[in-house]
Image (cartoon, rainbow, N blue to C red; front, top):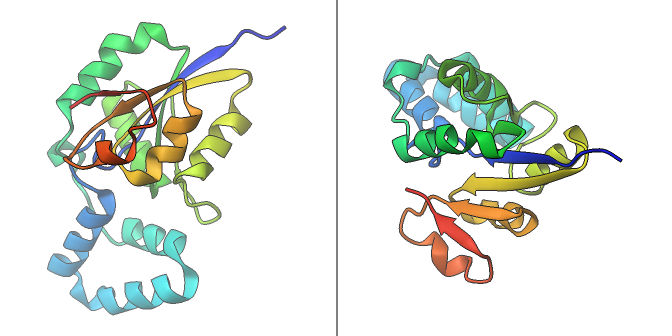
Length: 178
């Protein structure tokens, strides 16, 4: 019989960082490469979100040193590392951003993000965890309504509350981390 793996899955946008990588990418594009914005809109409409996320990554430069990391979440991860067999940064942001941030912080065992074939949000995160880890129990740290199905499937729900998410998760046993 296999040992149970205990996973801590951590969201990126508005959870590990106090902003959103798409917002930062759009801001960069509008301030420095506004001529690419119409192309991004057309790409989004015709090819979808995953292609648009890749386009933003390919045409922006985001300084990791300047990201507004949520120190409460970073400390939570560091203080609870011993309670988990694996800690993963899992995000709807383009996987290259997620990879860079994971490597920069050096507190995660792995990472997963949006690729051209999958938008790593909501149920896709659950599918990814179940497909890539055997015999798992997982806890999830997130912040939005898109995270509700993940919290419902998790053992423990850890919530970064920006002021209104708790009214949607009264049916879930959760702990606020902020």
